[in-house]
Length: 506
Ligand code: NAD
Image (cartoon, rainbow, N blue to C red):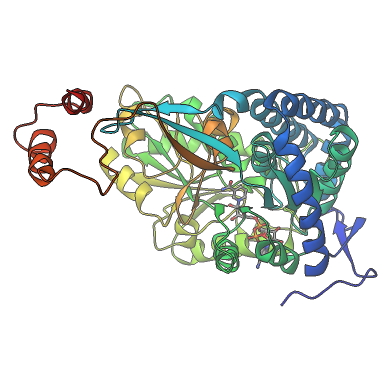
């Protein structure tokens, strides 16, 4: 149960590599969250009244200010989350890509659309998109800038104000971004941050926000949706994944192995779209495994020049260890790393073979530097196993000519063909999942419209001699309606809506 915070209550942020405290933030209780949301409502009203061009200009200023602080942001990501410098800089760059894209594309994505008026051909029918008001963004710790920015940038571009609750493991990066927003956006309170752990997130979910964009685990997603139900606040859920990779017999094995190693191990495997399980055709299984193992053995863990950084939390290390021990106990073969190689905040990249779907490492989200590889007898078997999951976020296929056809059979929100994770780097592609991976979309035009309410307008452009929306109808009307039903929808389809209109006017 959330409690009102006293000003003395603070939350510390730790460097996962050294366990040093690197800063602290207030713990916001429900009363403070409500007050911040109330300020955001005022900001949202002003922001929504600006033209799209004026909003674009402000978002450009925000983007430039973020870019000017890129080193500082990357340093904070490195220290607070544990990821190596290169991955921190990549995250800053990808986040900026979305701020740029959302600002540039909002005008086109939100342009009112004229649609067919069907039978009511004397009407002009349009769909228009309007800001929802205040969007509450609740974020995770694994990509503490890129992931929430996928909601924040699109929500702002669509004309909303944002209140952001970052993960309790990575609050400093959010506080810094809000500071930059306050300095660079002319509109005050457009992007505010509330800090704290679960209870602060719960307070935001119960507050008067007009939409919640949640990114995190499926378990918390369910709690957020339950809390939001009290006010019928709409929710967007970006949850976990168990992304499969399929390697067919005719795949380019060198490329597939390199992509697999990167896709499974970047950010030490702590990505919602990590490659979490690999299905490889029998004929190429052994060669693929050899190549993966060779590449993994060249990776360095920890240190300033390490390829893999520290695991962000002790709780995550416990999950990874549990999955590895479960796999080993059920017969998996450890080719590199393994449960015994976990030391402090570091997990050595682990390649497993002889795995199957009885093991957690093949069915639950491991969220660590683990590559479980399963031999399959056919593409059909690979597709069936890939789809045998409660999750459905990303996926990847390495194959020859049939690659696209295989991709189309995967039950997932996103698929990369002869590549991994590429869909996340293309800002115009909507991002999101199905099943326990959530619903709704960020990124792309769909990601902008996600933060709008859709309005339908029907404008009468001319009156008809016969007004069907009136009680003053001629006596023969039932007969005419019967005829109309037959002609328009029955066997004797003769008339289009326009023809019918002409008939009525004649
Ligand atoms: P989490 O569910 O533990 O926490 C996410 C956020 O929810 C945090 O800010 C947390 O403080 C807050 N929270 C906790 N309890 C809450 C409550 N009752 N009400 C409201 N908010 C509450 O997730 P995490 O461990 O921070 O992140 C890892 C998970 O996020 C993984 O499952 C990962 O796959 C997923 N993820 C998904 C995507 C995506 O786009 N689909 C992206 C990144 C991460």
